Length: 489
Image 1 (cartoon, rainbow, N blue to C red):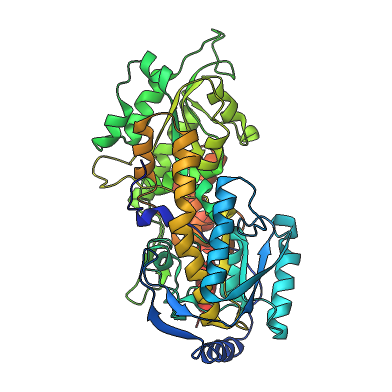
Image 2 (image 1 turned 60 degrees about the vertical axis):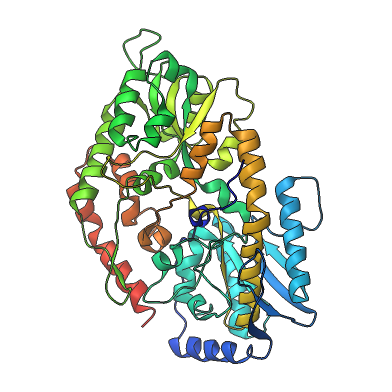
């Protein structure tokens, strides 16, 4: 059974970044003050009692809430279809409309990769024209965060009274990680359920583990002893040249098959690697190449590049490891939760684990989320900010209460997971998320040039020492951080 108390870690997710030219700070300040002044009569501080906690009470008199979304959003559901997740979203949306006496109107268009510029230009033009055509904006996570910082068209969410980021339906401590000196312009929570599937886990072949007499991996996790060293040890034990040709190929057996770069990035969170530190005012900086970063990346590169027990094919990083695991030719493989849905029909018996710790001294197992592929939300400076905040808070709160349980219990535990122990692993995975500022705003550093992506860069560069590799990127790190912080001053 699903735990009645859903942990705050379940909601840790996502925001990432892009770049666009800055609007004037004067224009931003005037618009922000204007937005705050328009809302005092509509929203009260009255607290609604009940399971949804502390939602503000308000009646917006039948007003239309205008959503501007990219086409890959998961909230624009027009009718019930029998799909458990979509139906839960549909009902949640209707509940929010009724609670606040509003009507939702959606405008969505292609906004992914090649379509991003056109999508965002439409948003920017509308806001700069002051036409109030958008109350809430939800777009492609990889680009939205830095755009929100640089463009000057979005409101500082930390100044919206109706938004309470201490509540478990938001991203745990995510708002602190993503803030720059108290400024936060995009957020993710249970508004859009799409981010649930981006949580990263580790699947393992239960039959192969038994054949190799590895022991109880679930108990290993429970004892706090599932670490990087154990991943290496068991991977080496699993590997075998099955066809006897003296080399390792697709017909041989491996310990670890790396599926994609999201799976690689997730080791940073799993090992609790910190690329950013904050001063007393909450301003972030990149301190440099620490001993922990050096040890982790050097060890991972040695394991992945030089050890034959790891299947890692840069030319086939999208789906090839899935086939390796499906054939029973690997013991471990990273997997996003959305990928578990496609494994329901596999004949082999599999279980799931959290990512390993770096070592046993690490106090917790930490999880990652591929936030680049999620919807992040912002409030335009032309909107009634408190009204928009009330709606976002209610959407996330009621999503937490009514949508997340459907996904977590039925879609995952009921179909994607095959034993009670794996259900316990889900609880561990969703309980503790780790994100780094430079991952949230990664695209601001340029495509795949952020400090938090140095592990995947090092693997691409193979045996280039991390010290020289880091040095070659330091100017990018420094200039980007200066620009991000400077845009808020």
